[in-house]
Amino acid sequence: MEKITINTPGYRSEILVGGRWEEVSGLLPEKGIVIITDDNVSQLYGDRFPKAPVISLSPGEESKKLGIIEKLAEQLLEEGIDRTGFVLAIGGGVVCDIAGFLASIYMRGIRCGYVSSTLLSQVDASTGGKNGVNLGGTKNMLGTIRQPEFVICDPSMLKTLPEQEYLSGLAELIKTAIIGDKKLFELIEGSFDEIVSRNSDLLTILVAESVRFKGSVVSEDEMETGLRRILNFGHTFGHAFEMQKAVKHGFAVASGMELATEFSFEKRYISLAEKARINNLLKRFKLIANHDLSDDQMKKLVLHDKKKTGTDIHFVFIQGIGKAIVEKVPVGEVLEFYKRFRDKK
Ligand SMILES: NC(=O)c1ccc[n+]([C@@H]2O[C@H](COP(=O)([O-])OP(=O)(O)OC[C@H]3O[C@@H](n4cnc5c(N)ncnc54)[C@H](O)[C@@H]3O)[C@@H](O)[C@H]2O)c1
Image (tube, rainbow, N blue to C red; front, side):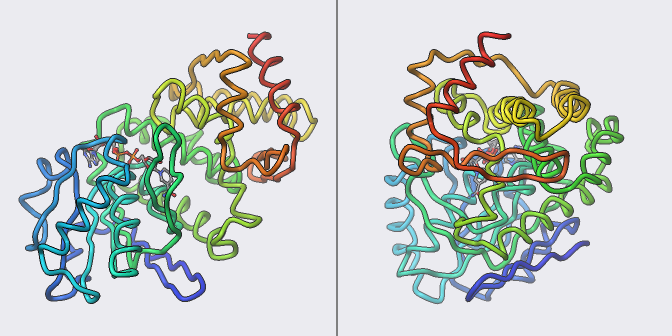
């Protein structure tokens, strides 16, 4: 098992990759625990949950709203959870985002930990302490940054994931490789069959590398005032596709990465060969689709993006595979680029 520590001011978070999730019991306090999960996860794994009250949510993004947080807080109060309480999330990114947000505001903050059960949450959502809920159609508008005490990433849980969920997580893994880890990119390129068959040993390595990279970025810039922005590679356009088309996060980000790669190529930051390698990898796993939005739609969605400051966007480019840079780009230039890209296809 790999243990990766994330140190941020006032917090220390241990990410445990490759161990058995049932061992979570050894990390919990003796009392005052509430488990938050969703109906799919509790159906598959509920018989092995630690002994504690369980609150199961409807699966999916719909549950990520403030009304649910209020209901959950009331349930915690009914369970007699006080400031010494512990929220244990067992689920994917939605469950971890909700549970982490709840734990960070309930009685001004109580302890929490995650058993992260999707590839997307293992490689991305559970590391870094960001959590929160959506506001109407706008994603993750209300939230906090607070590290869970631990995150368990057990690759055996990924065997039960529906194909589309697994691939969605793979897109975020590929993102990590593109922005920060050339060797990881090469490993993914060379391991197609093992990735498709969800080989646990390989997944342990891939998840651990991804967590290690994200952890190093977060340890340096927890509040996203600088370096952490590189993690948003593919997300400017990706979020627009996600909001407009209701596609899964990873697929939207994959299409966003195709655009960000092309934009990087236009700026001569990457070679034609590098662009081809990235696109080939995304296409091999069938991650990118056509998302034609009108100029007006794209403008509206991009202007909603949290990464916009004034009339500029912090756009993430790559300078070769394994290195990302962030530049302030006028919104108009981003939209002009999109138009060129769309009309060329
Ligand atoms: N906090 C962050 O830094 C961060 C980063 C990226 C994404 N996110 C958020 O994560 C969310 C997406 O996460 P997700 O893709 O894990 O979605 P999810 O939590 O909705 O899980 C996807 C589906 O898989 C099911 N599932 C979960 N584990 C399973 C398992 N082991 N076997 C079978 N089915 C299982 C769930 O019930 C759900 O239907 C989005 O809301 C996104 O905004 C947060």
